[in-house]
Image 1: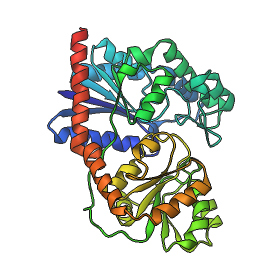
Image 2: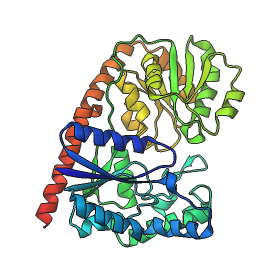
Image 3: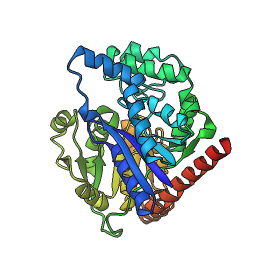
Length: 395
C-alpha cells in the first residue's frame, strides 16, 4: 500500500504538525511506502492588498494547488491520500483532485474548522456553537477569526460554499475524529455519521515507568485564556498553602507576564517557561498529577497521553473530549468546567487520594489498549484497508 500524506503546516509549530510526522514515521517503521506533499503558512506573504485578496480566494478554491497536486499524484500514483490540515493554502480543491483520479480520501479532523471559522467553538472565552445551530453569518458578525470581520469573511464563505456543494460528504471517503465527543459534534455540523471513525493520537513511552513521584503537580500548555491557567492559579492560591506540594507551569503565551506578576507571592508556584519535549516528559514523570483546566472543547491534548505514557494521572475540566480521555476516578479526576471552587475541591481530593496506585494501574491499562504506536498502527491500517475495499466496490 502506497500512502500520500497531505498537510498544510502552521506558522507556529503545533500538535497537528507533530501528529503528521509521527504517523508517517509509524507507517514507515511498519514497512509501508509513504510520501508527503506539504505547504507551509510560514511562506505566506500578504503585505499588499492584491496578495491578501488572492489568499482569501485561495482559501475557498486554490487552482494552483489543484494543478500541483494533480501533477504530483499522476507521478507518484498513491493508493490512498490522507489529509490533515488544508487551511488556508491547499483549500478543499485538493479533495476534488483525488475524486477525479478515483483515489480514496481520508481526512483527520484535529479541530472544528468545518463548522466554526475560528476552529475552536469558542467566543469571548465561552463555548459557542452559533455557526452549528444557526448561520455562518454569526462568525462574520462577531469577527470570530482573529477578531476580524474582514478576515472571517473568506473562511465563512469557504465553509458556506462547500456546504452548498456538499464537498465534505461527497469528496471525502472517511473522516478520523479523535474522540467520540468530536464525532458527535461533526455529525451536528453535517458530516455523514457512517463516514466518521474514531482513532486517538498516540505516543511512545519515552521514560521508564517507576520513577518516584515527587510532591509536585504540573501544567503544560499555552498560557492563554482558553487553556484555563488563570482558574488553576486562582484555585491554587486557596489550596496551595494547605498542601506540601509545588505547582509547575510549563509553557509560554500572552497571559504569562500578567499571571506571573499576579501570583508572584505564591512561593510554591514555578513558572518554567517553554521547555523541550524531553524536559517536559521528565517533569511529567515526577509529578503526582498533570492538570488540564481548559475551558474549551480541546481536540485531543497530547499532554494527556504524554502524561499517561509516564504513568501520571490527570486532573481535567469535565468539558468536551477531556471528559472522555480522562476517566473520572479511573485515570484521574474531573472538576466542573470554569469553576474555581470545584477545581479547589478536586485538587484537595486528588492530593489526598488513598488509592493512587490504582490510578496508575488503570492508566497503564488504558495506555496499552489505546495510545501505543502498535495499537494505533492497527487502527490506522484497518481504516486504510476498509476505505480501499469500499472504493473498489464503488467502482
